[in-house]
Amino acid sequence: MERSQLRKRIFARHSEGSFLELALEIFQYQFENNSFYRSFVEGCKVDPKKVKELNEIPFLPVELFKSNEIKTGEFQPEAIFTSSTTTGSISSKHFIRDLELYEESFMRSFIHFYGDPSDYVFLALLPSYLERSGSSLIYMMEKLISESTDLRSGFFLNEFDKLNNLLVQLKSENKKVVLVGVTYALLDFVEKHSINFPELIVMETGGMKGKRKEMVRDEVHEILKPAFGVLSIHSEYGMTELLSQAYSKGHGVFETPPWMRILVREMNDPLNIAAHGRSGAINIIDLANLDSCAFIATQDLGKLVNDTAFEVIGRFDYSDIRGCNLMVE
Image (cartoon, rainbow, N blue to C red):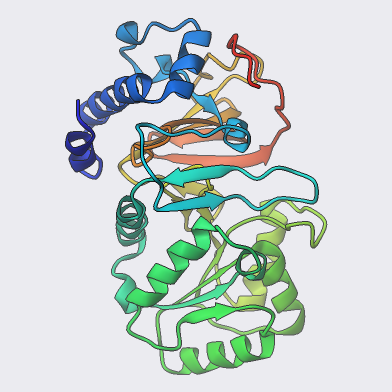
């Protein structure tokens, strides 16, 4: 199967059958054209010709993006997205063959969950992301901001007074507003300001980035909700190694777009999928990840709510890659 043919089918209206069919074709394509992933699959003692179900596909541990070039096919990347790091740690690198594919993925996903981006004012409180290069989140927000018809859409560093004044103004104009913020910056903001803006969509992207002590999501949301006067806090679930996002409109339950699926694997046996309703480690199928690896084993803990919804309940350290006989240099 050629890349162009697979590319055309990623964002189709998938049934369970069509999703499975395309996922298996992408698995075969990536096995054949991604030498690193092929070595991983072979190390897992999996015969790709015998793989018939999603849970039979080997999922590549996300930490391998830190020390390896995960590319399907030969290409010069249009961009290289990098993860944020703490001091002394290694960042992941995602080599992007086709920025248009990423743009189509996040635009379609936003439209799927929230409607036309041109209807919104986007305010991005993302200081730690702005202060480094290579952020896929910044790239996404730049494009969403450019789709807005309101010129007041934009980024904020630590300009809390300016942001507060703009929120007050936008509320008085009955504007539809999305405030996207890294968690620690939103907490810093509400220590100085509060506003009763029930229609505001407050979307946290997670992470303290070493700026504050880590807190569980419910604790963060219980601080933010009264400070903004909203009933729920939205969340975005994405990562450098993916090209798609899941969204939560509250209560920590994330919904996936049609070209993305979540499986939950057993903690102590990473090649086995956990029984429905049981918590475990999150595996992600992202069909838009055509040019790297569409099958990612994350370091997040979670559980499925239904076929398209899941909860994230924490993270774990999983530095050793168990279950597959693969030596990574």
